[in-house]
Image (cartoon, rainbow, N blue to C red; front, side, top):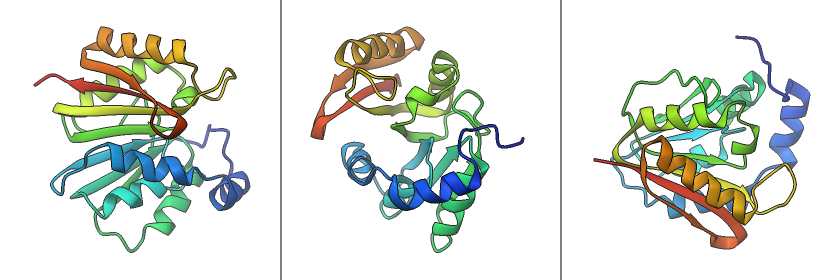
Amino acid sequence: MGDTSPWPRVKSEIYGLCGRNPKSNRLVPSIAELEPDHVVLDIGCGPGAAVRAAAGVVARAVGVDRSEAMITIARRRSRLFSNVEYFVAGAEDLPLPDAMFDRVWTIHAFHHWESPDQGIVECLRVIKPGGRLLIVESETKGSHGLDASMAAELAHRLRSAGFDDATVSKPHRQLVVTGMRAD
């Protein structure tokens, strides 16, 4: 699969150095209620900061990104972690087994998904019963994020796709839409 993302190598390197989301990358592992035996997935992982943050807590942390350049950076930065793995993939076609993950999240990347509804179905497929999906976006009225009504609509879409207990919260000025897969 060629790199069809908007993130060529040079742009990816620049983003990886200065365009990170450090607060959000720390926020998600802290609100995801991670346990040492968990297996987690970060969709749209970019240079892998949240994957590495989770790797210090969980059994296995996996990241996917459509950009080969971002995955190259993430692999290079994660080379000292034995429990981290990365794949080039989009949310809509995850190259991962069914019911593998305790937590799946996407941080400031949901608005880039090519087919959000197909991505939501894929998330449901790869999450274990009792596992959770967390979609984190900035609160905005623009195209890069969600506003409150869009977040409420997204929670409804999660419930329609088969997630239970879909909620919207706003920790640290981020909109977080969470859905739990039924047991």
